[in-house]
Length: 527
Image 1 (cartoon, rainbow, N blue to C red):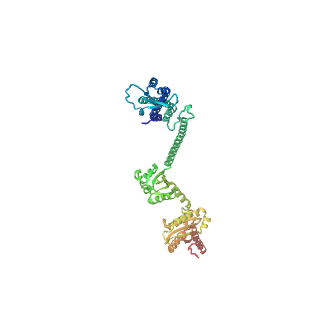
Image 2 (image 1 turned 180 degrees about the vertical axis):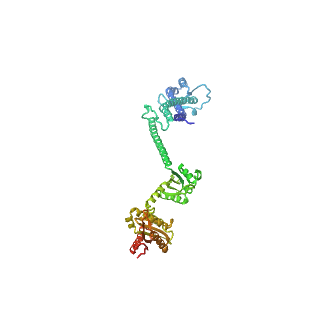
Image 3 (image 1 turned 90 degrees about the vertical axis):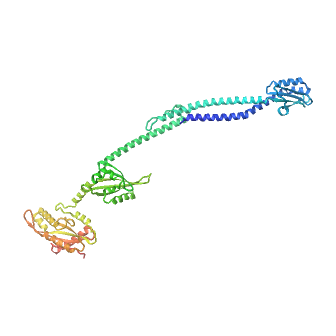
C-alpha cells in the first residue's frame, strides 16, 4: 500500500524516538543506579560527619549514653540498618534495627570510619555502619524510573511538537502540491498555487520548478499538436496531389518485395495487369509489371549504392489495351534502429507525354510538303540503324534532281511542289518500307538509305539505276503540261556512324555525277 511522504516521515521519527528512548533508558539504568548509590554513600558520609565528634567523645570516654544518642540519631535514617562504635580499648557499642539481621559481619558488610581523640587528635576508635542495600537499590531504581518517565514525557512532547510542525510546515503544503499535481493534465494551462509563506523555501522552489516544467511541457505539447496537425494536413495534401496526379507510391524491403502502396498503385496494376492488391503484396514489385524484373532490381541497387534517387522510364504491356509508359523514381534508405534497407518510390503514367514527345519528334523530323522524313529524321534513322554485325552496312544515297529549276521557273512554285511530291512517292515505291528510308534533305535534294550487306555494291547500283529510271519518267502536271526531270545520285557506305560525314561523302560523289553529265550515279571511293 502506498504511504504519503508525511506518514513515512512520522514513522521514521517514531522509530528514531523509540530507539533514542531505549538507548537512553539503558544508559540511565546502567549509570543511574550507580550514581544513586554513590549519592547515598556521600549522604552517609555527611551523616557520619555530623555525628563524628559525638562518636569520638563516646569512644574516648567510653560513654554508652553518648554512643546511644549517636546511634539513635543515625538510625533515624532508613538507609542505615546498624551502627557500631568501638574504642581502641574495650568499649563496644552496637545499635541496630529490629528486623532480624542476625549476626553481622562488620568487616565485610560495614563501612568503617576512624574516630579521632578530642584531646590529641589521635585515633581513639571507629564507627561502623551497615547500610540498607535493598532500600538503596530500590531508591536508585525509583530515581531511574522517574528519570525515564521524564525522558518519555519529554520525548512524547517533543514528538508531538515535531509532528505538528512537520504536518504544518511540510505535510500540508506537500499534500496540497500533490493534490494539485494529480489533477494537472498535459496540455492544460493549470498551474500550482503557492502560499506567500513558502515563496522562499523548498516548497516554493518545488512549486516554481513544477510550474515552469508544466509551462514548458504545455508549450511543447501545443507545438507538437500544431506540427502534427500541420503534418497531417501536408500528408493529406500530398496524398490528394498524388491521387489527383495519378502517382503510385510504394515501399519495398531489401528484396524489393512490396510492403505498402497507395490506392493509385493498386488500382493501376489491377486496371492494366488484372492484379489485385493481395496478389502483389509481399511479392517482388518489379515482377508484376516489368518483362525483365532485373532492370528494376538493378535500378534499386544503384539507388542504394549512390544514395541518390534514380529515375528511369519503362514500358508496360497491358493485358488489354495499348502499351503504357511509366516513369519509375526510386530511392534507398536504412532504418537507424534495425539497420535494414528499404526502398521507396513513385510510379506515374507518362504515356501521354511520351506520345506527345514522339509526335513532336515525328513532326520535327517530317517534311510537310512530301510527307517524307526531313534531314533530322534521316540523321535519326542512320543513328538507330547501326548494323548488328560486321557484314551489315548502310548505303547512303544523295539525290539531286536535274532540270527541276527549269520546271519551277517555267510553270511556277505550285508545279514545282507537285513535281517534288510525285518524285517522293516514286522513290518510296522503289525501297523496302520496313528497312530502308527515303527523305527530303531540302529543295530538290533527296536522300535514300539502304540497309544491305557490306559487299553488295551490285544491289546498291541496281537500286540506284531503278531510282534514276523511275524519276526520269514523264510527269503530267495538274494543269495539263508534261515535264521531265532527271536525277544525279552519289553513293557512300556508312563506316563511321556519323551522319554529316557520310552525307558529305555521298554528296561529293553526286557532284562528280553532275560534272560527268548528270542523270547517273556514282559510288564514293577514297582517292
